[in-house]
Image (tube, rainbow, N blue to C red; front, side, top):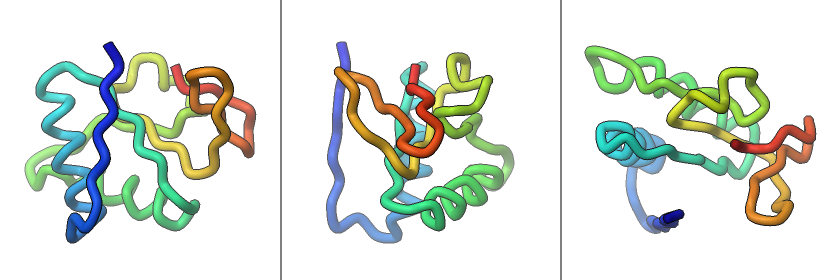
Length: 95
């Protein structure tokens, strides 16, 4: 079953997104992070390469060829098509 959680007033936002993503990955869940703009998506991407301090979170953009097998996906510009996230820039769909 799909589960959607919303967090507001969480600070620092990007670190909280990484913490929640790591928790989900530990539970064998998949995560889709919708960033409001490309700069935010790049900042989250950079942070995930060093989070946690002794590792990294496996992640990629929704249009990446590895998206179907990657637990954490990012999308910075999206439209909803049915129940799927579709990149407005590339047309790629989140698996």
